[in-house]
Length: 113
Length: 114
Image (cartoon, rainbow over all chains, first blue to last red; front, side, top):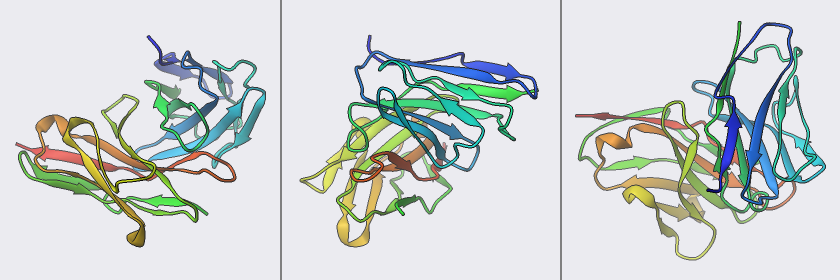
């Protein structure tokens, strides 16, 4: 079945450590996105990629990094520079950027302990 | 800059009552508009979308939405809600110029009273 897979579903990290969230899609979509969700704040865009080997900062990119070496993969690294990393992270993809619907993964809940 | 506003953070309706969730957008070009639903701890599921044509669009689970260009609105409606409709609802606009990305509203949490 086609879809987007995020792993792990739950992730715990100690302060000061970097952690990488996985996002894989087998939908052959060009565009991929990372969103952060906090209670009452909706979805805020962290990074997005319109094509392989290209990505752009979203509204809250500080403390995060991404790569897009393969079309199907768009991992997100939460670095120690991110001051408040505890959140629910959602990955999404769409056939083309902007004008087509996005398909979402099930999310990763990151908790800093 | 483009933006999406959902004025209602939380709405409570009784089961069987009608529902309307508001969405206003600010975007200079022709918007591509979406409504998504999210159950707790889950990803988002597309309810419906508007790209062009008929301004009243039908979606899944009995939902519909109406695009009103003059009001920059894309409100979501359902004639009779069910307890299973309790969730969070997000309106989004797809940019087709410039950055070409999706911008989401803050969401409306829907509670259903029995």
